[in-house]
Picture (cartoon, helix red, strand yellow):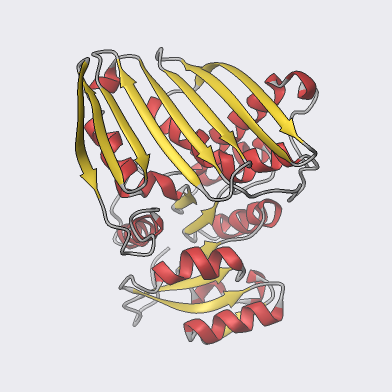
Length: 342
């Protein structure tokens, strides 16, 4: 798709004007140059109007089909999985680049099918796995690149209070949590490993109907082992990483603010390798700013006819993360019959 003559900025349609768009996407999007919001779309007219007022967009509508597709160059989608899939399919059919919040679809087969359709077209589709773009995670991924060429162990602590009830087609809170939030951690372990797990073992300890803690052990095809410690028994969001390499080196990311070298080839170190102050309200600390910047850069490159490959979370990554969700759920002794929700 080529931008209409006379428009120097990327014209964006914001689709889904709820909490995620208001709190985690638009506040960072508005700090980026080179774009303008031309349409706000939401089935709820008040939400669409509120976002229209906030952005100064000339248009609002209850659905994207009501907007002339020549009036925007790209779209940012933040809606539940089922409509998300249909919206992405609609935009891809018109060769319109889109950024779509995870999980991007309601099931693994649906995501696989959408990935295949998108790969046959020319539109750039990026999935919102924002923690890949967090400064500390980026640093750990890069500094460990050489030692990760051999098998290693990666432990990911990922705790979030929400979802704390079933949602979006999942009638079980553990599954809803895993598919709609814990999937971030699954994307990270596969991004570090660069390969699918050969085996999956999961254990969950429930506490009542809607609370749980659990452990997942993944052995990847390249020999790496990932351990995910997870659950919603927490009062605040927690993400920590610990990477132990075959040469005895151990890197830890105790929070999104810093990375430490705890063991230097088997020798205690404790050195601080990376730190960032939490003064940006999550811009690079949580990755929302860099991921949106990356999306806009890819849209700009696509319009110039520049071919860019890899380096971003794609529909293929969303599909593989969803497949891993399936495998984890199937491995739970009491849940072996469950394959997908919805």
